[in-house]
Image (tube, rainbow, N blue to C red; front, top):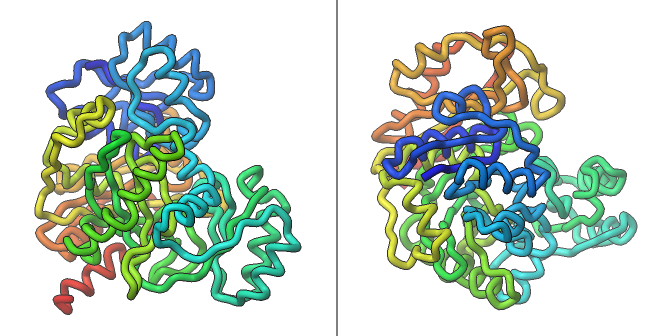
Length: 426
């Protein structure tokens, strides 16, 4: 098969790395890719916003499957447009991608189909949103309705924080994404990421993970796109997985089909495991980043076979095998992240890491004058497998210590919840 992968981050490097091992693969192209992806794929320059140009490339290179990494092109309808050209695509339609593209859409779907989630209100003006927040009180969660690169959510512990977050949305801090705001009840419990491969009719469980959103140790500081993750998530017991499928995923699949937007692709449920059971925080319609990195490390099956089954509506006949080991990834970010990251600093020592039993996925890197340099906020994902979370954690941090990049920083406690679970046996 000839495959085209769209995207340039750590998630896409993990997908490229895993697909490159498939006996089905003839040639892998990636656009725009990054230096890490360039080790396993041929990098090509395409304007992903120009869907007809992407289609023309697919026809020229006889592409058998397009795998869309990030959410932006999906919400913009690239899957529909490529399918109209007769090109097979792994990823949801524009109508189905609204599950990520509009938080308000998803909340309304939950209300209509009785899917457990936080109580909420939707607002398109500051005055009514403020009135709702003042009436409800803090803590409370403020979300820009649209895509905001993982940064449009504020968990406000005080009213002042909540009102400042509302003002940021409505004054244009998140562009069009903040033109409408969802205000949600604050849920308590343990967060988990739950993934399903979907083909429009069947949802096949595809692993669990737990990520770390806050920038600082001890879950402090502002939210980020994710500073690290591990898989599996201990809180997602077989019973909790079964409840999540029955109470959240299956009603969502039925609901989306019911409204004429059947979901095919990867459905990523951000969950809060509360005293009452699982509740949906939000949906994403693509692999998580950095969750994809730990899932691909543990996946024993051929990823390309599974993606093909999803595209062809054959998931009812498939199963997924996972390593019993735990995978853990630590994000190395550029100084300044999640604000304005410092770009251009030189990174050395990656060759030592891969000899030490870890895998480094490139997220925001570039080549400048023959040197590997930082070219984004989240720059590297240092990933390792271990028999326990503690062992995977030790291997990942031992690998980080081999990397020579003074301008980078990282959290020192990725996996802390799971390490506590292991120590207490609960």
